[in-house]
Image 1 (cartoon, rainbow, N blue to C red):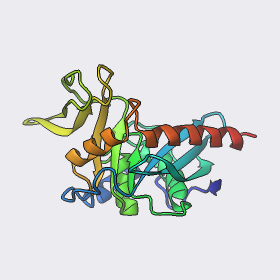
Image 2: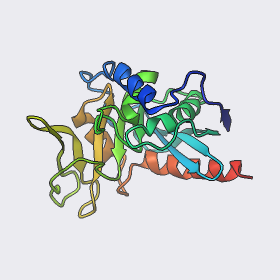
Image 3: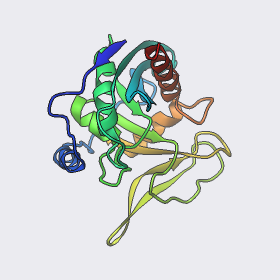
Image 4: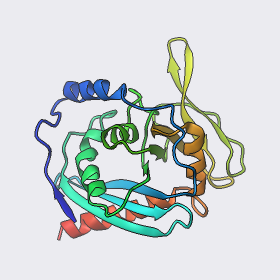
Length: 233
């Protein structure tokens, strides 16, 4: 387990954090397809909080994309690096998530975040932020649609519908509601960095053979919760 300190110069106010988002958002790459599903590595990242102690634990779990077997896993624990502000949650998590990724003994491949990429009020959620900082292809697979709207996808697994944001001239597709299990509530997929939306959805389906949530996220969620318990002694 890696112990993490808040980096020097890390944003301390809402305005500083939004300025960082504005600066980095223009570096998101949207014209790369990304790695083919079922090839190489796929890494899930997730965090858990101890609000009483102001501690956050992050986990990174690398899977073989073809078999979904666990190849490597790491954890990191640190102080929460930013207060809770909707739309700025990445600033609470990124230092610890980066430390977990940096500790991996192998190439992460595609990184799957339990959250959002372009499906974000400022079009720069955790998956996009993490992708720009690391250069890795990233996607966001969230459990709820945040502030966006969608029509319920058809019942069969693999059905999808646009996740829509209101704009001054109508609506904009920022992701997709994707049915990963027949008749079960969809997940919400968005591009982070260096992956197309079609490919992000294909990866999500490849990662959900048995459950609604990607195997990468399921493993990372269990691991970060365990790391948080161990850090508490």
